[in-house]
Image 1 (cartoon, rainbow, N blue to C red):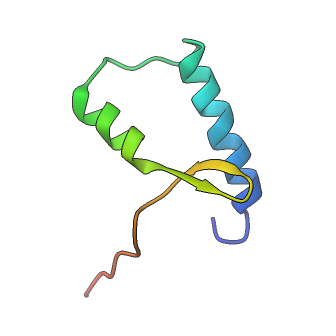
Image 2: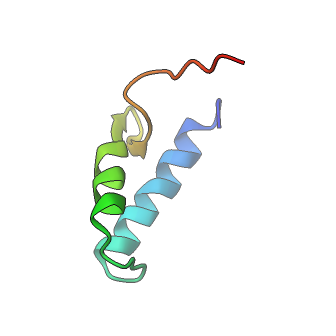
Image 3: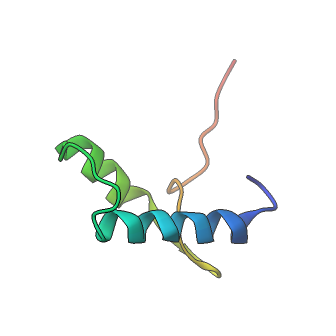
Length: 59
């Protein structure tokens, strides 16, 4: 999604609101909850999802 940070951030914020307002639910799985909470990253457009650092994949 390189180059579309603003659009993806706005979509992620809508998803966060939908979960908060119970329009989207999950099973309550602890691993999923931890993963989602750890993936939240602020940027200049709001809150998005991402990793702490780049992942290098060796082929």
